[in-house]
Length: 55
Image 1 (cartoon, helix red, strand yellow):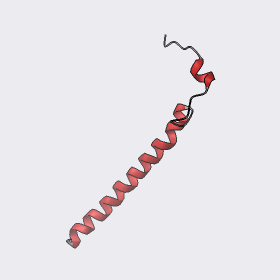
Image 2 (image 1 turned 45 degrees about the vertical axis):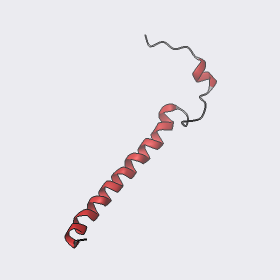
Image 3 (image 1 turned 180 degrees about the horizontal axis):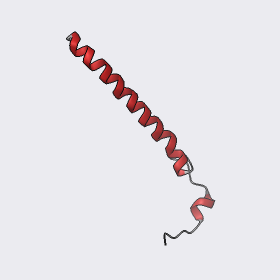
Image 4 (image 1 turned 90 degrees about the vertical axis):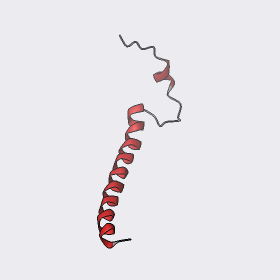
């Protein structure tokens, strides 16, 4: 590969990789917090059994 192309693509790939890492980390850490439990775990009965209205 051309060295000029390598010098252009290497920092670009590093920035994209760092951005994807940050986005995935925030998504997988904040999802259990927002849901109140980890995905795949059953919700607590106290939370699931309460009747709630949106009005």
